[in-house]
Amino acid sequence: MKNLEKKIKNKSAKIAVIGIGYVGLPVACLLAKAGFRVTGINRGKEKVDLVNSGISPIEGKVPGLSELVKEVVKSGKLTATTDYSFCRQSDIILIAVETPVDERTKTPRYEALRSALQSLAKNMKKGSLVIVESTIAPGTMKDIVAPILEKESGLIVNKDFYLGHCPERVMPGKLLNNLQNYHRVVGGFDKETAESMRDLYKTYVKGDLDLSDLTTAEVVKTTENYYRDVEIAFANQLALLCEELGVNVYEARKLINKVEDRNVHMPGAGVGGHCIPKDGLLNVSVIRSKKNSDAEVAVKMADLAREINDFMPIHMISLLKKGLEKAGRKLDRSKIAVLGYSYLANSDDTRNSPTKTLLEKLNGSKVVVHDPFVEKYKGSLDVVLKNAGAAVFMVAHDEYKNLSLEKLKKLMRTKILIDGRNIFSKDEAKKLGFIYKGIGNV
Image (cartoon, rainbow, N blue to C red; front, side, top):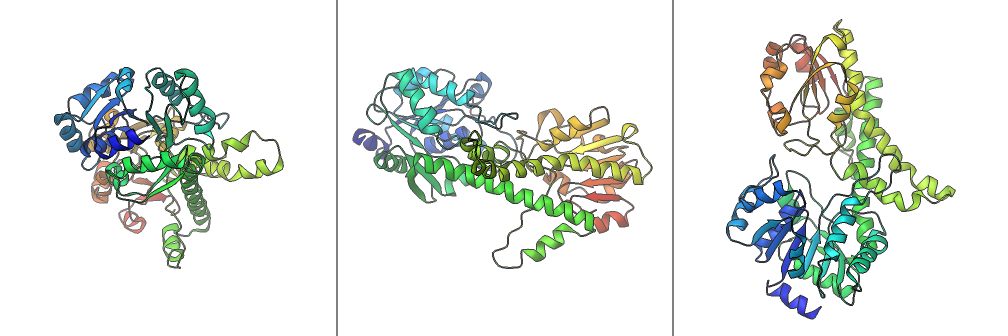
């Protein structure tokens, strides 16, 4: 460990980052920028080739990332490969792979993590430090990660290699900003490991680096996204209530949040992304299998939050049908323009997209989709909107926020506006003759 600490401080430690997606790529770039020699490892060759050409495979608005990829590749500090044998030269290995949840059992699926661990273990040298940045269920580091690495490598944790968990806190569109400025929980197998990890992360993290143990780090990360899922579900439930009462949820939210310590979140057409839809389920997965009344109560909030938030794109269809009915139109005879397929504004990230759910439920209808950041749907916005019987706004991309109601009126056949992200003013839309139905504001 003393040798490793020395290498971290003089930047001679060689680092491998397994998984060069939304987390791994910017992490690898920042470590390379800090002066380390970094190798990104990815199973898919397409991403590897792009990175080695100095091109970021991540599209959408990600300030500074494309420039940083080009810079660190050109400097020779970052290279990418599909070959795990490079881990044999690495002093530090970071793992940033996906950890989805099984929709049926609501339990973690660790295929990607297990595969990465097994490939790493066959190529791991003594004295190396393995850090998992992926978000994982509490107990995973001790019950899955450590046993796989020990079994497959023949090495012993805390004797032949070191183990830590420093879960990422990122968001598409703010990747570099969040990685550099957000506080991080640094969980080590023991205190000495955590201290060495802190030395590594402080080379590019400006926020606090709070030392902890492995399980606490797991709990903190899964809980913070679980909290957000619950908060958004509450906002969506409030929006549904306001619709029934004829109240504008955004006006109610503004007045509620004027009180100190109140922070009602924004409602919307659904919750997507890789983290929020699953992290609450990861958080409670360890107790889901326990057959007692305490455990049954403990998982209820996670399940209810998922039920409410998963319902919102389906509710958008209900609003669409009401709008068409008011105009005397039928769903199966109308061109429906769906605006936005990514899960987040100004991002190309489509993981767990609420729009995907909406489209599945609209199967059989004449639907045309547009998204300026998703390759499949990058066509002309004007063409998508022309002669549309209704426009359904699922994502608040800047291009949609800059779209005037006057232009919409000229392009569309029937002036029906279904606003899932509070992009337009209901009053202005109605003045121009639109039938307006918005989440929490009908």
